[in-house]
Amino acid sequence: KILTITFLLILHVASAQDLIITSKNDSINAKIIKVQKGMLHFNFVKNGEIRKTLLPLEAIKTQRRNFFSTPEVPANYKAKNSYSGPKYRIAIQGGLSYLLAETASSVPAALRAHAKELKSGYHWGAEAHYLTNENFGFGVKYSMFYTNNIEPNVSVTFSDNTVLYGIEVTNYIHFIGPSILYKTQTSNGKNAWVSGLALGYMGYKQKEQIGNRHFTSTGATFGLGVDLGYDIYLSEKLSLGFMVSLAAGSLGEIDIEESGFSQTLELEERENLSRIDLSVGLRWNL
Image (tube, rainbow, N blue to C red; front, side, top):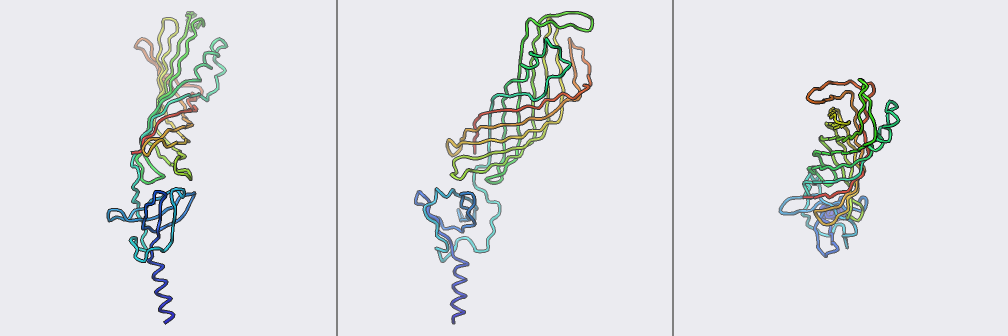
């Protein structure tokens, strides 16, 4: 008889359900899975489906284990990927950039200040990710770097001894490629750390005017993008994001065009296109 009672008690505990009462006094018949990093993970039933979700501990008033004798979620149920949060994350950002390459020793002294000015510039970009759960997503990323500098009093001597005055250079670096995203909410559930990795196409274009001559140089290479950011939630669907990024790549050859004539130039040393981006932007969680 004692064994029977013990068995029934064990069976009751094994099949019992947990009670969660939120700070808004909502009661949830749930199966608590774990508490991790200030978040309560649990399974519950909604619209006849068993779903897996989480809430910050500060949003929970009470949690009582084995409160309900009749479970809605089977005791041996293992939740599949039933993520019911935002499915898409769309972001736009822009800010300051700085090229990491050192100025080549072959650059004439009169142009070194000009080359230094071209290291600093601006960027803007956008990305879109499909979220498979609250932490992970995959999608595509695009960014464009821009810098420009004018030196009206500098003289440039060409190989035929022609001397021209004034130089203006505009550089563009484009990147586009598939990207993966990882984000984790802070313990209060109001903000999130975000990281990303992208691999893809990096394109380079330089428009240069020396005196009355115009040159266009282009090239392409494999690019890598690494992001680390912090999102501050402004509402359920909108957040303000701050990010630091590394865009890396280098060129081995460029095509130079002037007045419809072009030639391919193999570089003795690869041209480093890597840069650091500091950006701010908006993120939509839809």
